[in-house]
Image (cartoon, rainbow, N blue to C red; front, side):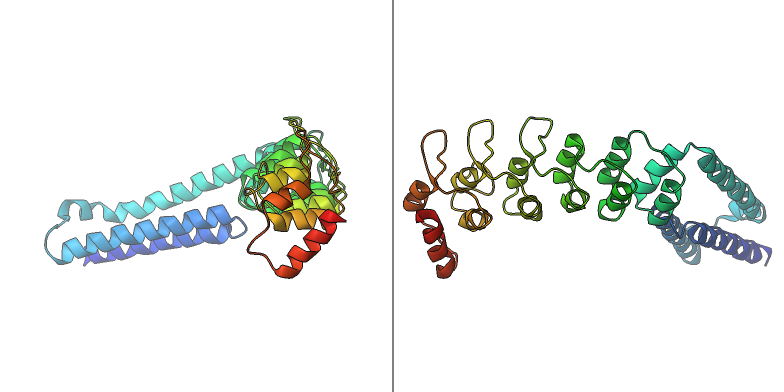
Length: 283
């Protein structure tokens, strides 16, 4: 009887501890996930012990003698959690902000930004882009004063799976910014094909006559496959022409878009688009 009471107390204490942790961390997605993981692991261990005991495979007689004392450990664990939380609050605001943006904690990010003067925004933008919630927190950093056209940050944003260049351009980023490797941001964006980033750059006024280090314009680089998904991506070529790209500009070898169109006629696109391409290319 005592053993059953001890087991029941142990289970209730464990459940209360995990639920309290989940409740306290409800504004923190990472903390809530961790609490749920603890609960799942605890339930698995509990079911395993119960099953082995019921089948008579394992009779933890000696272990059960000490179970009434196990619940006494949970106040210690709660105290330790409180100490860790206090330590977190005592951390410098920059550390707290970096953690908040990395975890996607929008409310905490807003609260910290409202009382901070930030000198160097790059660490926080990088922390946001390294996390899974960049689309939620990057606009907050930009609204608070982060520079929108830091070349290193734009290069990182282009590689992000959780945001795009749109929030940077909406806050005034220069669409002709040169990245750390010396290339215009438009060329790096074209490496992914006709994407949201390219569309946003073109709409923001990116220079369509600019040349990369090899001497190719965005239009010719896209048509030849030097940028984008390979030769024959005429949908992207068509969009660049509609945006104002000059079809008469030649590449470093003298090739024009008309030459490429004649050699590699577009396929798998609507006939109306083909006809409009022909008109725009041949004037």
